[in-house]
Length: 232
Image 1 (cartoon, rainbow, N blue to C red):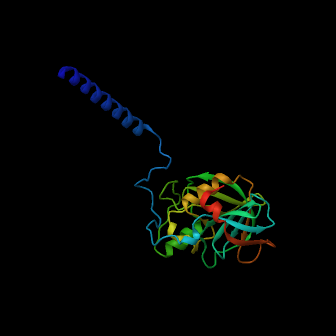
Image 2: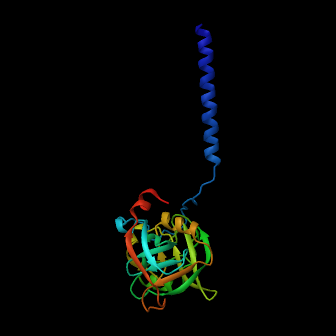
Image 3: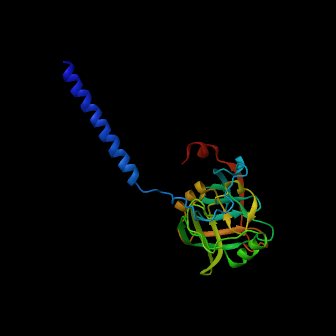
C-alpha cells in the first residue's frame, strides 16, 4: 500500500515539475508588449516629482458642443482633451501643454500614428538645451525611457507635419502643467486609450493662444457620474 502511494506521489511531483518547466519556458519565450529599457538609451527627465492631480484623471463628462462625434477638442487653458462622443457626451483626459512662449492654437488632423515611437529632437531644441547643460541625443529609440511615451499621434495641417504631437510621456507628474515645447502630453494609459479610438484623419481643434482655431462651441458640464462608474 505504501509502495503504491509512493508511486502516485512521485508521479504527481513529476507532473508538477514538468508543468512548471513548461510554464517557465513559455514565459521566457513570450514577447513583451513593452520594449525593454536599454542601458545605452539616454534617459530624459524620468524621475517622478509628484502625483497627477485627481481632476486630471480620465473621466466621462457631459459636454455641450456642436462638433461632430469623433472630433478632438483640446482646451490648453484648462489642460483637458475631449473626445466628442455625441449626445452631449465626451471622454475627458488630463494633459500637459506648451510652456510660456510655446503655446499655440489651430485646427489640424491626425496625419500619422505610431506605437512606442522614436524621438528626434528638433535641432533648435538640442541647441537650446545644450545652453542649459543638457545634452540631448540626435535620435532616441522608442521605449519606456522615451519622452514620447507609449503612443504618438502626429498632427498635420494641409498635408504637412506641424511637428506637434499628441503623445504619452515618461514624466506623468507633468500632466496639468505648462512644460512642453508645444506638444500635448498625456499619461501613457490615457494616450493608449485615445490612440485606439482615433483613426488617421481625425479633426483636432486646439484652443489656445492666438485664437487661430476660430469659433468653436463647447461647455464642460461636469462628470457623467454613471458612465464614469460603470462605463458605457
